Image (cartoon, rainbow, N blue to C red; front, side, top):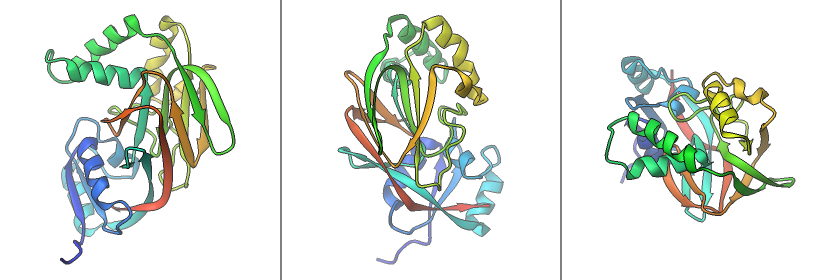
Length: 238
């Protein structure tokens, strides 16, 4: 069969994640028309996330930009945005088990419930050049800067630099966590002493009872390895 001219995802980060599985490493360009809750991947690569018509123009008459994607093993999955492991993925797990309340409210309820029982997780993080062992609230491995509808977890992450940005939020009192958390929407949380951001082409996360989510989709339990593949993805941008 003939190679398609492009694959277009009309939806949010979850659908983009699915589309990336099909096109990463193939040379087939990915077009994105953002129609989801977060649209963080589209936003990071310069696609207007609140203007579907402008996004459609980019699909029809835009240029092709080459960016990195990363492969997760042993699950053999690609991701274009952020892998989250720790408190945030536990909130996701809890929210996914809930049938009420509907929509985003479910995540707020899940966050409050999870925070009540949450204790820091002992992580072993293996990077290109060293191993970090630390009790942490969460670890995020980012190809692009944000996830969860605008949380700029790694504000300096560039999708075409051949590296993954790794945010480590060290153990902290719950009151301090609640005070610091809102700063993630502006990206100013990086100045907090409990926050460390490092860069690596390959990152292995290991932690007991930790489940990872990639681009908001469940990947599975640790241990897992994220390895960047420079230029693995072609995207249609304005």
